[in-house]
Every structure is written in structure tokens, then in C-alpha cells.
Picture (cartoon, rainbow, N blue to C red):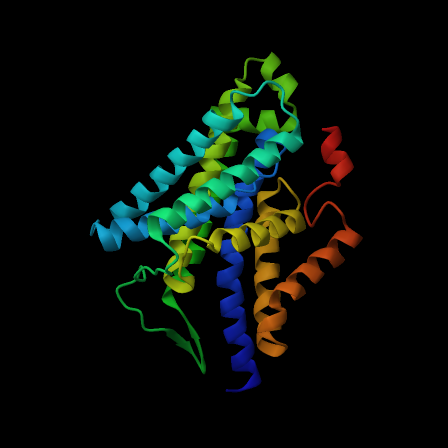
Length: 297
């Protein structure tokens, strides 16, 4: 295979992986904007999306399309239950307390997934009826990658419409800007926090479903996805959805190229080194503000 074909193949892989990281980062951003906390259970929402979809489609023989929406609905409900059960009852909790709660939720969800599905690795059929790779010279593109990019683009469009053209979305943006001012004009901040958990769980579930046909899924997969998603969110600028998508592609491409031309053993280190380098130059990320500016808001 020629150098150009190798490069193109690594780009295809990096774009697919980067799209997933971007979607995980979107989930982090939604909750961060509404609450100011980092939801460290976000990776478990991704894992649950894939595992529930596997159970419905391969176990119960539910049609793929119906299983997709049912899986997203179930994980969305789980996200809402976590918020209602662990976050909502607290009176003026500190940010650190909320983060610790999300860590506990992550451990609980991972343990529950291991109890239900065991330690086996599962997969899903590809979304396309034809699994034959699309050839570009000597390089090839997995048809599932097109599904990943298409669903990611659709998710971005839906989120943009929701946050910019609906009253609920505008209320969530108001909470992100200033919770006190939002509450003074009648916004139910507690309800917005609930919706942020539910929406981030839904985004995570979608990411888990679309990645499973190409990356497989098991009960422990969420931890690494959460780390990469968080790194992506920070690199893009916490709270910036566009930044999350751009950073996702950057990290995905760096990982793929690093694994291909250097060594797969160092791909995680390469991505984190790039993250650190960018943060030294611009601590707020590509399209975000600095931590101090964000805190003042």
C-alpha cells in the first residue's frame, strides 16, 4: 500500500473515532452548561446505549430502528433517575460533592452492567445492509463510518434547533449563563438540571449505539470513552459544542495517525500530549474561555 493510501486509511479511521469522541464531549458540555459540574458517569451512558441496543436487537429480536429509539429512551430515563435520586434532593451542594456523586453513579452503572451482561464483549450488526467497504484506491471506508458521521451531524442540528429555537432550550442556555438571573425571571433551574442529565444520557446512548458495530462493547468500555470524551471537551472548550466536534476530530486523527505511523501503544499518550500542549497555549481550549472567566460567569 502506498504512503498516500495509508494516510487516507488512517484519516478515515480517525474521523470515525473523532466523531464518537465529539458526541461524548457533547454530553459533558450539556451537563456542564446547566450545572457547572463534570459528569464522570457520561461514559457509562455510552456503554449502556450499546449494551441495551444489543439486548433488544440480538436478544429480543427487536427491529433495528425501533431498538435504536427504545435504547435511547431507556438510557435517557436512567440519566433522569440518577438526577432525581442523587442530585435533586441535595440543598446547595458544592461542585465537588456533585462530581463525587457522578463518580459513584459511574461505579454503580458499571457494576450493574457487569451483573446483567457479564464480562463478555458484544457486537451489533452494521446499520447498512451491505457491509462491503467502500474503496478509494487502496484505502477503504467502512459504511458504518458514514452512519456515524451522519448521525453525529443530525444530532448537532437537533441540538442547535433545540437550544436556539425552543423555549426550553433557551431556558437551559439562560441557566448556563447565570442561574440566579434565570431563576429570578421564572426559569425552573432544578427542572433544567434534570433535562440536562436526560439529554446528555440520550446523546451518550446514541454514541454507544453507533460505535458498537465497529468497536464492539463491554461493561468496562465506558471508562476510557469518558476519559477521551472529557479530554475532547476540555480541548474544544468546556461548554462549546462546536469546539467539542472540532476537538473530537483532532484527537481522533492524532490517535489514528500516531497508531499508524509510530505505534499503537502510544496512541493514547499522543492524544493527551496534544491536549496538554494546546492547554498550555490556550487554557480555555480551542473555542472556550479560560477557567477563571468561566468561574466568574
